[in-house]
Length: 273
Image 1: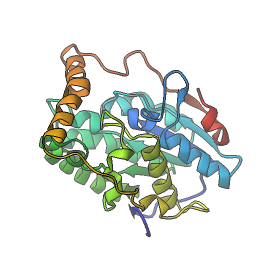
Image 2: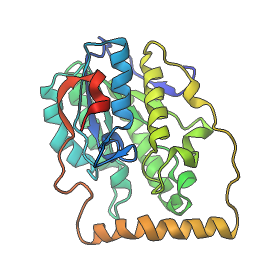
Image 3: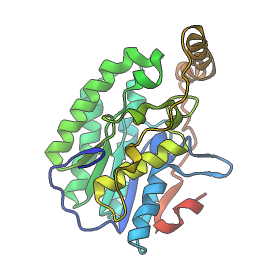
Image 4: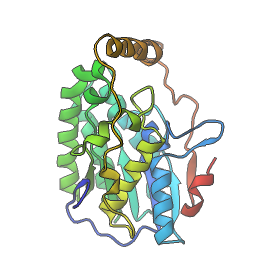
């Protein structure tokens, strides 16, 4: 394809009239809006693009922040199947990578189980390849081997089940800091917009293309002491509190439920609470 590399095993594509999104904070839309005005996110934005081509399309978003892969499977797969989607996006595993006890095979197995169940029901499934966290947050570089192994396992599972893999990593803009929020774990509004455009291109939606791959205007980047100071500020503001929640056995998703549990008009995704 022209922009994002899309790998697919030839899943049956019957249209995109019933789109269901499964996942964690990335799919919930954290980083694009807030809990007061409402989160938008790439899945909402994709639903809007689908609705522009298919006005009768409906959309549900079952994603909840903080969920591990096995929690996504346990809490979202059955409700997703009950909605009988013809299109589903499944993105999970990054939260597992950040945990002290990480087993790439087990995590990929949870994701593959979702691939198998959904494609077995005739759903066209799409997933996203993971970005290089080390290029977004240098302090996260030690996690790179974990992410690489998980990504390879999920790609292999996708190939076995005819799942489309949207890979944006071949484009430098995917790790431009302006596409990420200050916490460097969630996409910014512009990042969510670009992800939605990449998936739309992979799906061949009318009007889609590779404009999302274009780099942003250049700007000076911090270096030396300034860059180090920025890393230390990030660790204090985001890494420290995250580690504190882990030590207390808490999650950012505690007490939360899906923001859009039922299929409703995809064109109204922007107005979802």
